Image (cartoon, rainbow, N blue to C red; front, side):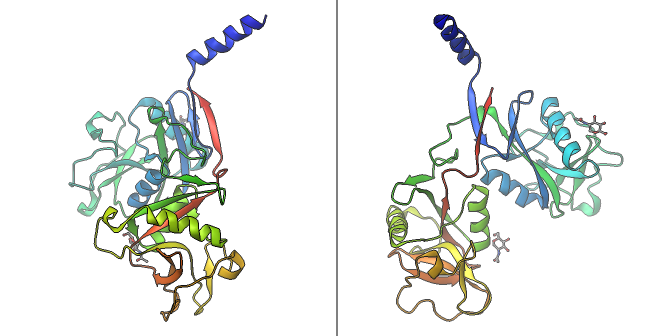
Length: 312
Ligand SMILES: *[C@@H]1O[C@H](CO)[C@@H](O)[C@H](O)[C@H]1NC(C)=O
Ligand SMILES: *[C@@H]1O[C@H](CO)[C@@H](O)[C@H](O)[C@H]1NC(C)=O
């Protein structure tokens, strides 16, 4: 009895590979991929960016199975309207490819009536409507969209609850951190951390300041490319518009959060509403211009977003 059970379990594990990804995506066995419908409309560039930072790509109907799944998701959430696909000609007008590089000529989806029309010569992004037809649209308009992650990119979910290998758990705080060396302004840094399932780092103790200081030290100036200050990075606090009212991205004052050690002479004067949180290599805080790109620290808890398993 025991042996036959073992045999069944063995058979089962030979025929199926188990994969995991964040639970806000659902796995489709037919399309062999993870999908997520994003209801909040975005322009095409932001849609591309968000999917990418979640570890996925902006979905394109490159196979009948993917098209069916995309239409299923649309029917459930957004039946009357249209969504952006990953098909675009933003590099060279008229040269349409998916994000992954499949040319439009290989995509067997019909055009909607009177489309494509490249209206006013400004349409370089392709939308999919509820009838399963394509239309060209300006990339700057906003549409809902679908993020897609093929099974082939299967990798293990780490102890940080993500497929992103750059998040590392620190036992001292029991939280995961990632340092982004590519500078962004505060708004884009916030987006990146959020899409990765985390948030701009919030320092809750002297120990956590030490954790970030040590992580920063692993990236000497020579590891960054570009012309920007390399002695400071964004973290998760900003001015709420009243001078000196600095709050974490979770709404607490720095004192409530548990760490408010500023570098000498900081925070200094600023125009209200334009001060965002920074940390020096020393671990001390500074207020910096929100719109000047800087490297940044993201933080995520090990259990969010939830990770779901699927059998391939
Ligand atoms: C979505 O709804 C349309 C209209 O009701 C229907 O024709 C189409 O087959 C549906 N698509 C899927 C994939 O269920
Ligand atoms: C932040 O950067 C993005 C992309 O470079 C840009 O579109 C946006 O306007 C910037 N925001 C601010 C507040 O500077």
